[in-house]
Image 1 (cartoon, helix red, strand yellow):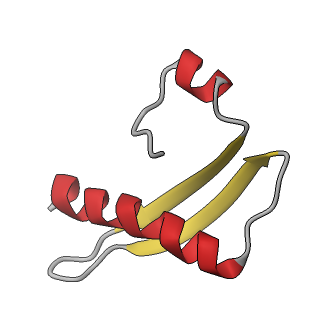
Image 2 (cartoon, rainbow, N blue to C red; image 1 turned 90 degrees about the horizontal axis):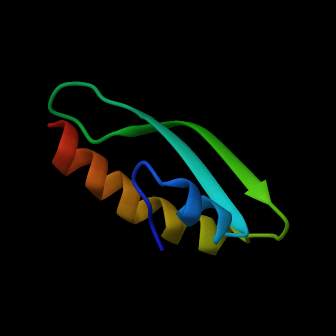
Length: 64
């Protein structure tokens, strides 16, 4: 599940959160600048890669 600017009820109902910070250069895909995981639990590398894809696509659509 992905939230863009989550409300407090959404944040409270999500036990594990992945926060991503992107930067943009003209005519290029977004670059991940920072990643932070909040909550109890673990992610493996493959899960992390999958979880970054949708926010990266949304950022590309919304910010270009």
